[in-house]
Length: 384
Image (tube, rainbow, N blue to C red):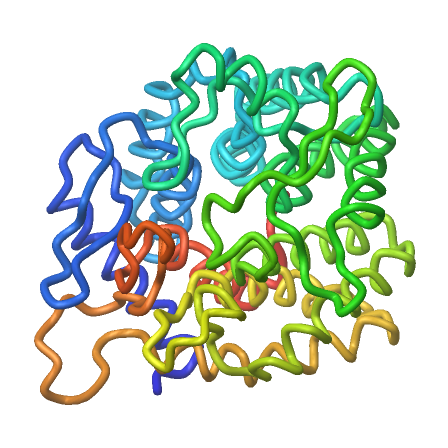
């Protein structure tokens, strides 16, 4: 297994290889045997992830042209500021906010804050939760292009994801401006998750509908990404864990650690440090794994691990980081001396096991979160 420095360099080499393959397209998932990327023309929900991978690689390898490319890429997705899409949080936190932090470009600060305010305006009027959004696009899961679906399902639907993709820009904006609108908004979304999405055993529900105008509970809706309506989709669990850890990181409110503990204990009791199956309840012995779920958790743990001083109450979480990273890096190419695939592929990611969309592939977001975790540990912190 590669050590941290080796693994980070392998991921950087994969970024360089990917650039040569994709041209102006956006990488989404790659064939596990060849490393050839399946691309998306507009970036789908992972455009910010690729932009930040370019930035991190440019910095780590002293390749300023990669940072310039990150800026150029961002300009091509600027129009998405206007889209009613929960992934604006990821998109502009990982692009504009990170580029501002790295370069001091004030235009990037303005863009990130504009996205944060746009996100705030889409919150559920009744309970403050962040909905999916009427223009959310997720390859292999849901494309809200149908007018009826866009008007009812996506505006009224809250996902377990939303404590991470939809809120990380809130945490950055609150830190950047001190405006408690962002703090209060994020707290409301977490409250909805804690009250409605976490089962007694610590597992999570994927989707619940609330009336957007009143916040009134409508009910659960069928799973889009999990094995069954009553199962536990592992990437959803990882978003909930990571989102709760981000909340603690920014507020130091131990209430969020208690929430994270219940969620993480469920995970740990199921698989320990190992990579989980795509859904914890898939009964098949050949169920696909999802390295991206582990990588998301590792990234959040790495952010905690570099806090100085490290709060005592955070140590039970950060103590789990090294074994999880060790397990995760076992899925990073080259697997052995005879492995001729491109280096730095994080194998065994799963986009959608339910629909068999990229069920055993490399995923760009899996690569990103492992890279982010290792970069954070190397640099002793992140910009947002």
